[in-house]
View 1 (cartoon, rainbow over the protein chains, first blue to last red):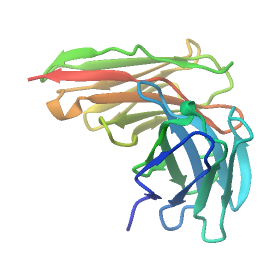
View 2 (spheres, chains in turn yellow, purple):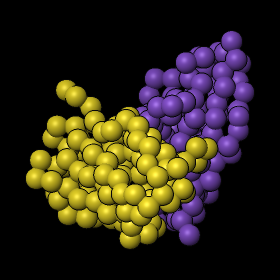
View 3 (spheres, rainbow over the protein chains, first blue to last red):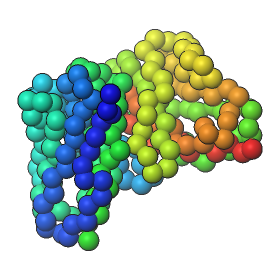
View 4 (cartoon, rainbow over the protein chains, first blue to last red):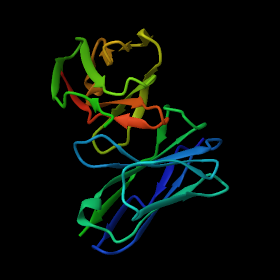
Length: 113
Length: 110
């Protein structure tokens, strides 16, 4: 079975632009979580979706939004990009809600210039 | 503010020795704890989960949990150079979200 997939792998944007990141979970997994990881730090929780509903939101501004589709894939959108948004964006899937055993995709490296 | 604290390291351990990684957490409501390994340039991968006080063993890995002291540890026996990575500790809070530590960088010296 394929693991969690994310696209694109790398992305370069300029300040003020908008970006959409995509994630496909492991087949059968209904929960998707998004994390931001800056070099030298642990992942910071952004969103969790389960069965197409938002189940949790981290301490991120409203410029960040996400959604989950009927096939359980997910998109993370970031508007009005700032230099500080440069990071590795990780998507993780799990079988169900409230599950700490998560499986991560390879991540999307976003650079904002 | 819910926090998970780890020593950033690096922790240098000779090959074949036991590596001991530690983590403390602030949220007494946390009941589930996880250790993830992250190689440089890669994404985290789950190594161990622990839910009850005491020890849980899986191959060369042993996770230890002490809820009274709000302390979690990971022991790696017979350390191998391939164990060199950053180890992330995570606690599930009362909202069922993972709170992550910053990770401990482990270096196994041949």
